[in-house]
Length: 511
Image (cartoon, rainbow, N blue to C red):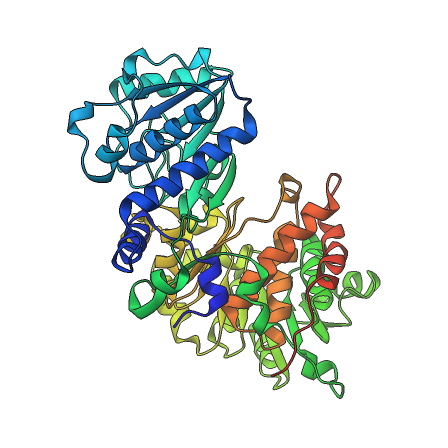
């Protein structure tokens, strides 16, 4: 059963949105009423961008998206705009509610090939909606290209034409919108790139579909979400007044030699900043002095020359989480350390070099067979290249049509929470729930930022936060901290930049 917060943040595929429409109609809101409200929301968006008398071009397609366009055209003409309407296909071929709205339009209907976007102040793209599963072609593709070449502002209905609302993919010509008006809930394609970059500002319009109707009585189950604090805030760690450092959570960071002192320290400092009570860095003996001399990023350093040393540290009963990967190395000693962490029953985050080492092991044993038997929470944090190496032998995972679905299938295959990193990071858990993140900035493209993210996740795991919520929270905070800091950000800044963001999170209340 989805919570109210999850329902509020839910993303719906085009198929799920169609079910929500049908549920609303079954509950008494007719199709024409829904279409009238949708068209009005589009007309309102145009009215915010143009003055009465200016030229508006409305491009309508052969389905319900086109019906929304006919409504918008009629309302805009009533408001004093100079409206021209062009239709893809024959007016007589329209059906259902779209036909009714076309009949209510008394103006001229031009063929799509005659549309002149270069003469318009605003173009309304009501050609095709989120469910389109083929590239645009012929006159429609040509007019979209002319729209993109024009100086007109573009308002897209539901999604820019040519864009998949489910995957965010754009195969062929696609409208570049300044604003996209969608209804009831966002779709994955609004958040996944390249879709996110093609939608412009996304306006979510209320057309009278209620959450109670759409998600009640088993109509829909929320399983994909926008990653925002209400999704994970209830699971945020709470510490009583009598807590101590081990109750706060102890993290073990597996480090390599002298060549990579900085990365594990970034992860360690991030774990401390997010609330872990104690962090220990386990490193090669030759790097021990270098770590000890660097300051308080980790309060304890331990020499670990062998897998046996690592296993001893992992057996510490008060240990809350282990982070393996940042600058760990790729030699046999590093491999043994990763395999020791993999065998342990300590909640774990595998990042960077650990992912490369795990990928190398999949040539003999699938990664799912290695990770799933752990018996403790596990988070994998690959970027796209690491993900492809990890799951190269899994045809089902790699055949998925979107980053969202790839992460979801990878999580199901491994039993781990998967954070597929990128500008549209996806967090997925084995039960099928997934979230798409919207925070972040290009300033995160700096060496070490991923080490900080891994440390944030480990710090939250050590405090007892469930793995999916811990990963979602860390990704959101990591991106928000970068947004707030702005230009000039380097990875060393990130653990400190998280602090003002943390201070704005409302305190969790018991009961």
